[in-house]
Image 1 (cartoon, rainbow, N blue to C red):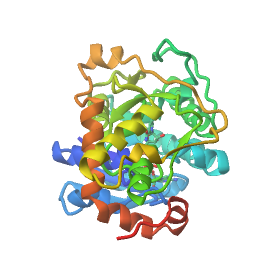
Image 2 (image 1 turned 30 degrees about the horizontal axis):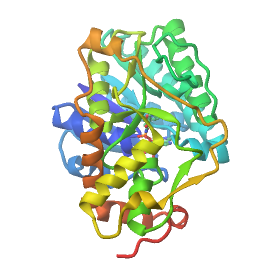
Image 3 (image 1 turned 180 degrees about the horizontal axis):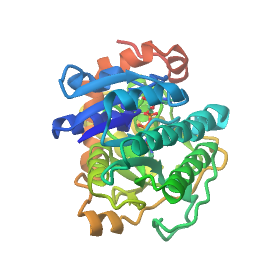
Image 4 (image 1 turned 135 degrees about the vertical axis):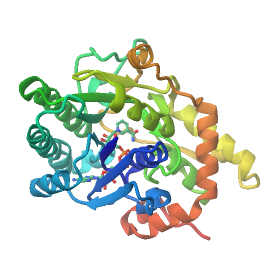
Length: 348
Ligand code: NAD
């Protein structure tokens, strides 16, 4: 297949790009290279003949038309987004512009492309979204694909809006779409401002490890390589017009994730620990959802996909990757002085 991947220099997009090229697909990576992008995350495929890169912004409609006409993809895997909940609380405008208007632009460009080619039935517009659109759960229950939408942060509200646009472009214009809503991803190349990298970096610095509230919020954790595998399964075999929830079958409280990462660091970098003593509870995020959990039965029963990596294994791989790839995160932080200031300095 020839795939146009948007946001392919981000955390999940780069995992999709690496895996798609390894599986023999041709990939065009369209990315605006915002603060969240890392060209190093796709370095291993950069010279591959099946890989092409287009620096473009999904807010720029003419650029999208030009790129689709030049590359003629069989499918679009749409991951480009503003993705960090805390940033959406501080500055929601960029989230509306990229996640809502950007997705609208891409849908319109995809529609023109698809109609211009005679509406091929095997074309796919695959929209990648989050379980956060479903709101917050109590102590029991799981999100299914039929759970009513109830987004509560600016981030999840813009993702919910984009999901509705994608469904409307299928219902109104017949565009062949598939959607996925997934849980919290973690793994190699995770951007340093997210929970698990922050724990690793703060622990290594000897600094307080911040945990929101009492750390009681529950999330399902999905290893990013498993997610990339699921996305490539859905884009090829998912039923048109359908959405699929993707989870890792790994529910855990944030505090337990933090303690497990500290324990892994105690084994790998003994001497400065126990790192759990650095945990510092901080004022909770406003509107912080209590619990997310995914019912993964549709993707399992229809497409035969299920996660392959346990939380224990995935966390160990992630910690090892971060310890081995110091050059990756150091370079990334040095290029982003504001982020470095927030995370503190890292002596060599
Ligand atoms: P990320 O922030 O790591 O990467 C986003 C990428 O999109 C970056 O490379 C960035 O440069 C690019 N981008 C941003 N705005 C753009 C624009 N206007 N035009 C073109 N490119 C632009 O995000 P991620 O964590 O890899 O998430 C990818 C997708 O998966 C997002 O749609 C997100 O909502 C969804 N998702 C993520 C998670 C998670 O745990 N990370 C969970 C559920 C859903």
